[in-house]
Structures are given as structure tokens and as C-alpha cells.
Image (cartoon, rainbow, N blue to C red; front, side):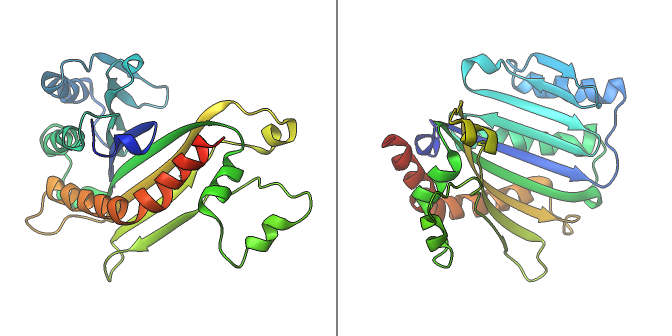
Length: 247
């Protein structure tokens, strides 16, 4: 079990490499890439293509934990839902980034952005907006708005993005995404749905001389882990879990 798995109902680690040029879409290029990925992870057997031209290879989702990878027109993605460890997820992403230059002709100068997302999902039936406001609070300047007679919170999705270097090429974003809409609030009927917390580290632009995509991913991993360990786990994730437990 990953060291972050206990912080939410579901935990996942996704990597996205966005390119300036279109990725190859020929039959040989796509299949050879996925066959090499499947050789390393034999249970990735479900292959299909979406109408918009995305190619997907994934494991069976019904087991509750699964790997997946996609080739989109200008984006190469890799993800692992509920990994046994953070290292297992990163090993998959490393392989994808190692294969990309040779099998998909991805050059170090062809990088629009590379990002690593660590996501935490909480299953909750109720008004996600009210839950977030209750568990995390709002800015002191806005607190009194919550006391307005008859008021109901219909949108509360805190987000903050920080630049971590002078040229703003490396950034980290914390965002909360809920899935409650005004119709559900009006009707008082809420489906059991996921409230998501995302910690995303992103680096823009081509790679520095001598650097590899794996090197960049490792630095992004360190950023995500630092933010989660020092700021998000105790101040965001655990308060949300406690608030849900009291409902």
C-alpha cells in the first residue's frame, strides 16, 4: 500500500507529457509502443481507440487498482490508480518517458510541458461545496458571507498555483474539484460521487542540456511529495476525511 493511500478513498499518480508537435499515429509506431509497455506490465491487455484519435492501453478497472497509458495527438499520458507503492507508479512513468524518444520520436526540445499529478478522491453523498467550506474554511474576508440568511454554498473549489523558480517554468498547483451542481442542491438529491484533491507539479518548455525526461519527473515528484507531506496531508486531506466521517 502506498504511503498516501490511507489519506483518501482512492489515490492515483498521473504523468502527462505535452508536445509541441503531433505524436506519431501510424499503426506500427502505436502498437510497438504499447507492446513494449505490455511486455513490462503483462496485465495491461485492454487496447482501444477513441473517436477523436486517442489510443489507450489499460488494465481491468474492476479490480480497484489499475494502470493505463494513452497516446493523444499532442500528449503522452500514463497513470496508476491505487498503486501498491508510489515507487511502482513512478517506475511505470519512467518507462513511458524512456520509450518516448525512441518509439514516438519525442525530442527534448519538443516538450511543451511535463506534469506529475497526485490525486486523492473522497466518496461522499452530499453537497461537496458545503463540505469543503466547512472542513477547510474560507478566507477571513469572506467568512461573514456564509452567515447570510438562507444562503447555501453552491461553489467552493479552492485552488492556488505557485511558481518555484524565477522564470516561472516550474510550478505547483493545489486544486479541489467537487461534483455537486446547482440542480442537485435545489432538489436536495445528491448521488454518491468523488470529491477530488489534486497536487500537480509542472515544468514548462524544452529540457535543459544533458537532462532527461526521467530527471525532470524525479524533480517534480520531489515537489509533489514536499507539498503533500508539509502542507496538504494535515491541512487539507485529513480535515476533509474527518468532516466526511461525521456526516
